Amino acid sequence: MENENEKLYEVIREDNYTKFLGIKCIEIRKGYAKYSMVVKENMINFHNVAHGGVIFSLADAAFAAASNSEGIRSLALVVEICYRRPVHAGEEIIAEAKEESGGKRTAVYSIKVYNKEGEVIALCQATVYRTGEKIITD
Image 1: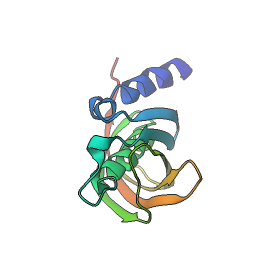
Image 2: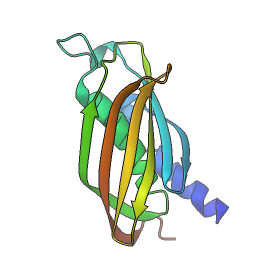
Image 3: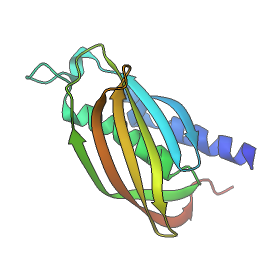
Image 4: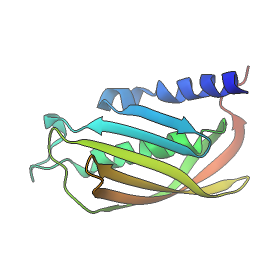
C-alpha cells in the first residue's frame, strides 16, 4: 500500500501546470495536501499585486492533490474563493487543503492560502466529484 501511495503521489507531483508556475508540493496524505510557491514579477497585475488567478492556481493545486490522494479520479465541481490580502512579487505563499466531508461520489474540501507569517491570503471551499475510476491502473 505504501509503495502504491508513493507512485500515486509522484503522479500528482509531476503535474505540468504546477511545474510551469513553480508550485512545489510540500506534503500529500489521505485527504490532505500542502503546496507552496514564490510569486514572480510576471505574475503581478496592473494593481502591482499578484493576479488572483495565481493565488487560485495554488489553492486549486492543493485541492486537486488532496482530493485525488486516495487514488480515485476526482474532478472539481465548484470552487469558491474569498481573497483577503494582497500578495507582492517575491512573497512565498502556502496552500493547505483538507477534506471536511467525504462520500462515495462527492466530497467537500476547505483550502487556506497564507503567507510565511501565517496571515490569511485567501479562503476557499470546494466540492469534488469522484468518478470511481482509479488513477493508476496497473
